[in-house]
Image 1: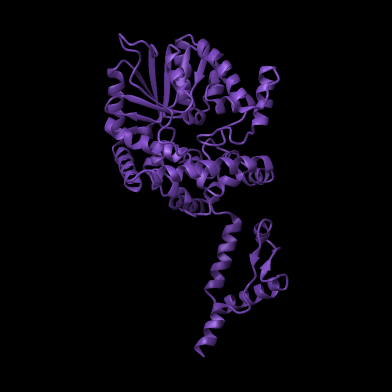
Image 2: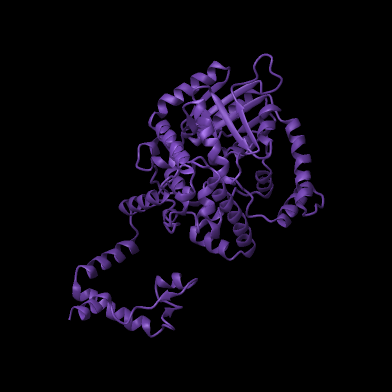
Length: 469
């Protein structure tokens, strides 16, 4: 974890802007309602849903506890089948490695399957600076690439767009007027992307899982672009966070049963692609070269902290769909690559706690995220831990003043009684039907969007004293 001061993202301003955007609100509600309902149906369809999720969690816990062992086994397995393994301690290292592979292969055109890890290391600008054209091939990712935006959801990157805005973006990019019919837009995407696949020298993917036992990289997609990305170009580069490794091939079905259900409610994603090294003699397709980039970028440091459970995340997006905060403000308000409840943990841990002061507080701690998570990550507990860490490291002046005053009042009965009397006197005169629609000071932020209950005519202590007498 880094506590270095970086330029702060204006989370509050971005959130207010998102809340004031009716189109975004409609899109978020429609998508998250659909995905959350699918998540619940998916789990309900499993007779042993809770037990299976517990089993997946145990596998992840075991993998992380023996991470060095399984990463070394994964490397040996990949090398055995003719692949190459690269270790990247930082995002800068990973970018340099991929650019060097591309230059060595004389690559001019690269296609990418959806990869949050490549977003994390900001790969596209590095490749473009090296003179390599990069095309995102997941249709949602392609849309936001053309629009010059970042993903706003782990599995639905263009959720903030409507079909009308998509038609406008693609029309401007392609120089032709497109209808806003979803089927027509999909056909346009197919036409454009197929040509990009034909031109590509290098395919870049992430990895949903990697099996240490066999050296197999697992890609889960719904559009088929993952298979084209890994078979059409002559070079395939997979960039994977080190936490994605699982021990055995027999462990894989456990996660495949849960990943799609957690993400969309599907029984299984449309395409599950297993890649073990480059094309072997006698095989008809596959890349001639296979490179696996194992990315640390702060993960090993997180592994040594009480927040190591966050590394169990399988990037399904279920916690985003369940979170009442994400459902209102969307992904861009968070300011980082990873958004929602899990992003409120990962961004401060991977980047800087000090540079992301609002993210640990961007939660009601209702527990809906943990209930939706396929591996039952205790996100609320870690958010509380980050709040404690943040306060211990450098509490704000306002926090020090407020908590100091509150402590003084609670330690002195006379001060507590006086504070209650003053609050009733000041607030009850503005109350209507037992509710306050406007409050002074910090309370004004609350009453901007909801009423606050007025103080009772008598405190609990006063009522208790009356009952005793």
